[in-house]
Amino acid sequence: METRAGSSVRTPAGTATRIVRAAAALAFSAALAGAAAPPATTADTLSTLVVSSGSLGFSSAPASVSFGLDDPGAAAAMALQGVTVNDNRAGTAGWSASLALTDFTGNATGAALSSTGATYTPTAATTTGTVTVTASTATDPTTPRIVQTATGVSGNNTATWNASLTVPVPNDAVVDTYTATLTYSIS
View 1 (tube, rainbow, N blue to C red):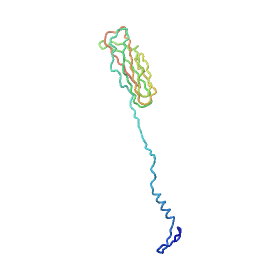
View 2: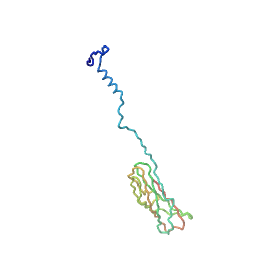
View 3: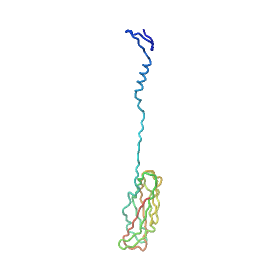
């Protein structure tokens, strides 16, 4: 003879036993509490990237150039090839390239030829990276004159240009080989 849970039942041995449904429910709840949580479908990792800053400067400029033979009263002209600025600052600041030309001095006589009236005419620059470079002719570069200006900079960039340099040779110039220094600077 069977009865519902919570009632007394006679077993074959003749002993009474109490059946409780609550015990079965409690055992099931304990089994669920010990189960592992399901795995996550996403995970985040903090990633850091540091962009380093380099320098701004000239990577190339003609080491020496020669006008060749010129007559008094003429204009001496020459081509300057491959002036290159490297901007590895990885920033947004622009830059300006300038030049200055000293007076010419005769190697044998020590005679001076003024660089007043000289003209430096740069070509448009060939660039890499994000930059806009604008050329400017420098007349009378006895003091520094801007010849290229970079704007719209973003990250690293380069600019390469050629130029012509014209210097008037005065009528009273004496025979000699004259030298001067053309100095490029950048800021």
